[in-house]
Length: 379
Image 1 (cartoon, one colour):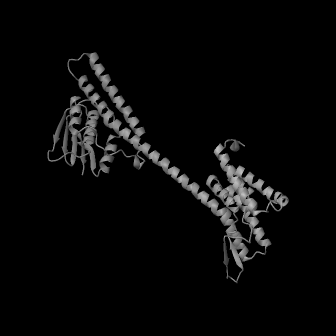
Image 2 (cartoon, one colour):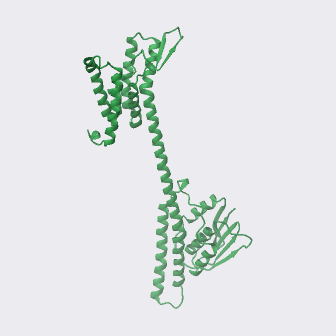
Image 3 (cartoon, one colour):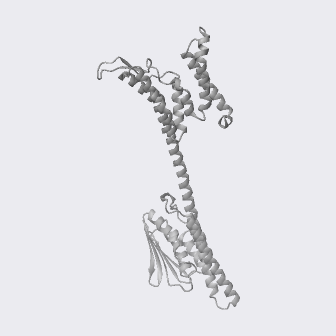
């Protein structure tokens, strides 16, 4: 009853129109009420009521409507959409194929809705089994000839099986489209998370590293009172802890298992010169050498920023040299002059290596002498 109360006015109107159409078809197939009203009321009246009940329950329970409309199934051997003459294994009388009456189309419609709306295939199979058994009984009662078997088989297939399979196929296609839509939305979220992670690493991570470098330089400055030195040390430690928390957040945002979640290949917002100048202003001793023979690669800014960030975190106070040519970017630093402000194992080089590889280049990073070197070869 809850399903009936939840129907909208439009659904009630559509069901009423459907019952009127079904009643008209049933009445047209039965006795003429103008010539024999009594027989019409006795024989056709119950069928009209049955059709009304089927339409009433057919929206929430289409399989129940299929069973209620069983009297209108393909049980007639004298009608068919097609007629054929078979000669195997011996000449047979004309065989009716698809003995479907106009009212049988309503049966097929509810069979289609059954496949469209029911996820479990066991109830339809259990319901269609007695219908098939009824067809077998009718054929055997009529003599069991080959032509009768063909008529009943095509009728059952056309009225029940094929519409149900079409509905089932429709439901599967809708589910696949929904799954594809959800997958596309999930990939979009992963791409956005990867972009946010890259932006946080490239901007906040770089700024925090420079803050730690400046605090370390202030901590080692001569002439400061013990309290000021202690405050500078606390600032350096706080910047290092913030960098570590940022790395953990970036690890949660990234999802390297999804190939479509790779960060975009857009260069950093700043140019190489601006990045170097900002690092130099923060106290990092940086020397920039640029090859004037051509413009720097598209990812030069990202490579330089990652190299300077790593140098600031892992080799505070060490001199850094940046070499930029049209197809090669090198960031090289010397040994650290104070305690590092971060622990190794971040995701910066991993993300940068992925971006360089997708751009068709290679990235190499490792110790060089007492220092460290980051080299990017780009097309």
